[in-house]
Length: 593
Image (cartoon, rainbow, N blue to C red; front, top):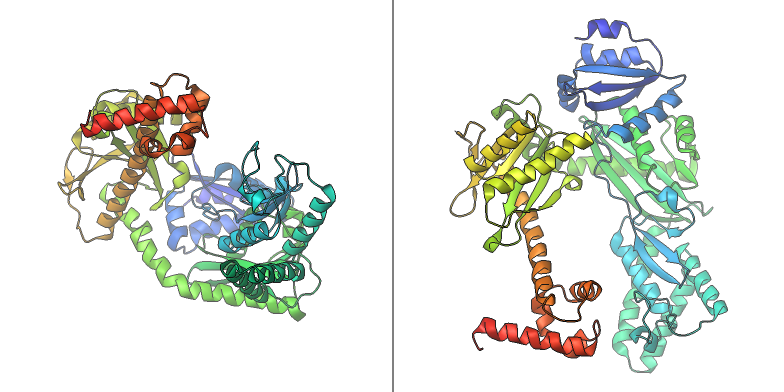
């Protein structure tokens, strides 16, 4: 296989790209020796996901570089560009929360998640916090101890926080800059790890509330003091240089890699990140580009400590960061501990991972074989919702390699005013796949419509119009609204064992698209019903309507509000008219008028 092409590959460093029959990049890798690495795919024994990758390769390309370091940087850039389906690392990774201190225009704290932390260098960020609960509790505690700004917007009157001495009244009163600067220094000192001052403040407040017989508040603060003491005790590590560093190690077994990262900030262990993924390539290369991709969107600390199996010089150059080994002493002990954690994580989760693969990847493969598809990676699933004939909407969910890909979900408002599943399906699929063609975006291997022959026929008509060759099947439910039948594009019912992983997989798919679409339909109905009511009230412009919808959310909640509550958003006279109108609607609906 590819004997002639492989004979032309040089023994030089570089990056290689694997393509499928649709001319789509499905894998990007790097190698010190391109010829040896590429040959290993087609002349060696491959297993697992690598075997599946090889079965889809139609051809390959490569780019020769001067050094392995250049190949590594090129590989990272190509992975970001193409997002190949077999480069699975960090695809669904979520950024960790940070605590951000904002000093302008008013001092406040908030929990943030930034997709690209490198662009936030001028912000005062503290973290990352793998435990979001801990971060939120710390912010809440600091807000109780210091008079930071807590409300949103700029109220024209002093709010409750001012009257309970938890805000300086920034929106209304002129504040003391020296007082704010002192408060800022203390908060930042605590977030850097100096807990002494905060503990003293809590003790002072406990004593104050106890003396004034506010025992409940005193008890709450006592619990916060105990919590802070326990958390900080857990964070103690034996490094006294207060350097921000990450410590990364890994464990490899049974075709999987387990990576563990310790986050150490100002001498305290904030927590750790663990990830397990299957080996697709040389495991050292896998871990190195995992590190490269991770720090592309996360904070780079002052120092990163890695195992001496990795190329620290190459990582340092690519990340523009200090990446070092730890040969002895306390750092080496922490590095070894990171490896122990990685091993424990893999041993604890391996059986669960294999069970999950049976329910997802293997069930997806079973569906591929049943439908005689060459490949089955991406599935687009559609459902329509038009309860009571109003506000027709459709939803599309996407499954990739057996798992939901929520970033690819889409919602559609339907232009048709009548309940018409056939033409609704045609409209949605035309809009979706016409846009796909215009944007040259990823094409699905399979389309599943929620319904039978009617919906399948609508889908086939649109695909034929757009000259697209994509398999279409339908999922029908029984009278009890349970997944019952899989119908192919020739309108035949396919026999599936209802106890099988495949049947449960199809049920999850149908339940997911139905849940997503119904939730969207409810949102539209809620907003639509409010808007239709507000249209009947004189004096309500678009801005006031938006403010009412934002505050109350539904007609039901609005009808229970008093004139005083409504007048917080709109003038009293208009609030009175609205309240009278809502009461009339209520009486008409109940038959009392």
